[in-house]
Length: 579
Image (cartoon, rainbow, N blue to C red; front, side):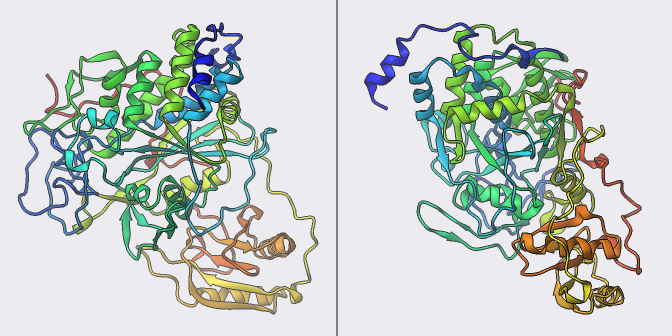
């Protein structure tokens, strides 16, 4: 867009809120590193430059995610070093904010073009595994899944001016904040699931769309925030899909310079702490956040400090920081819906400017009009139906001490609820049950079925000969072509998979014959025929039944669910960080 065109939109008179296309209904209703922590000397990957470090809230970039969450001990490690800096945690909420606010960009064609020119776009996914069929439409017949990514990139002067270890400037970025925003198909509720940046998982193969560089799939566990350096946000999307099986429609990424500009444009968000807090320990590490007990209104760099704070909140862990971020986002949404700070058209336009300038989005978001459409979908959800949650997790041991892993059972329970569009707030779902296939099933004797043993996990050995036993059960029900496969395919839950619509009816018939719910019948590009994966929920016995240990429609307590309308939340202050 040329300079003369830019000047044209700048000369436009500032329109009032109605002309901006703003809908007022959007706002209606509604290792704990303590100060006295012990240090264990030695070579550790917490030193400057460690990619797995937790140094985002330190003064010198020497923190480390391998620091134990209990007792504040720094432990030795053998993981390779790569660059880290002191300020890593980025404001994922700014991405969500952009969705909520870009309805302000209704000032005319030239202004839209100006905002469009500021949006940076990249490929949605860089992985080899195609997304499952999942088409979002304006009628709200399918859920909407958006991955929000906070990048610690230091490739601009604005980011470098905010501080951090200089050796990180210009290095590979890390996806230090990752949140999946899920809007239900009926648009009645919204779930936001955070994945701790210290999460260890298998990284899929990713190919950089611009350079063609191929990053092979990892053979061991890799820290999830390293996904962004493997080609861009499309690899972070691929990593999420590989772990959760949740189809992702869009991503939105922001760096921490964008966090500050967005927070300034909002004009302040109320937060609360249980005691006076100063996030700075005896070694000078911490975000620098300093607040008095009770409620404070924060913005700009102080908002960034809140979102980066680890030392001083709860047990001083990255999980505590995630909880504080959830509180901030809920408070921000409540403020926006009051509308008190967004009645000035000039402020609205400033916010639109900050949002579009700060964001990188997938190519499916082809402009501000699409962002406005997404905002229209989001604003349908009332505040009291927004739920923030953290991926249930457990701490690693030994060399992985201080890092976290998805908690067996609970993590998959949460992912399944999102996949199946089950509200995390415990209220009744309006979702429709899976439709029966219109394609009639073939006779059992004519249906081939491959049976795999998926009863094992990272912590539990598979039940021996389980695939053979279940193939025998199918044979007894007339499926004489059912055969077992020696492949071990760990699954939390039993599933019947099919590759195309022609076999959906056959797959549903197989499930019914064994008492498996139709909701467990899924299309998959990983199979070539009807495939039954016997999961960890059916390790023994001849009759399938849902796990008695869990209610599949209940959010695990370990997810720390937080309701968006709960204005009474106050962040607990860690002992040793008060003043």
